[in-house]
Image (cartoon, rainbow, N blue to C red; front, top):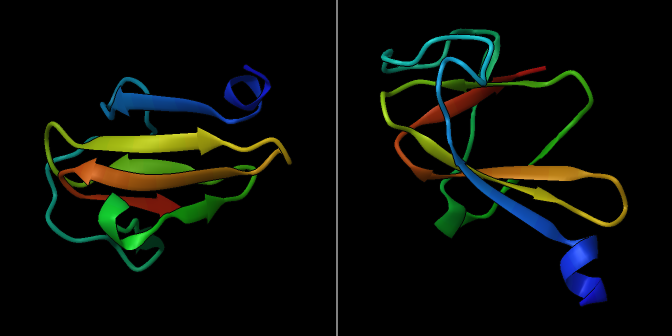
Length: 83
C-alpha cells in the first residue's frame, strides 16, 4: 500500500483545457521538445515545464515519484513539452 501512495500514477487525456496550448499540429516548434512514447521510456519534467498536445485525442502518462520528480510519456498520439 505504501508503494501505491509513493508512486501515484495518473493516466489522463491531454486536452487544451488542461494544457497551455491546443493540439492539432504535426510538429513541435523550435522551443518544444518531443515527448517519447511510453514504450521507449519517459521524460523527466522540471518545475514550470508545459506539456502540449500536438495531435487531437493525445493521451500522456504522468508518474509522480516519491522523490518529488514527475515523468511523462505519450501513450497515444503525439505531444511535446516546453521548458
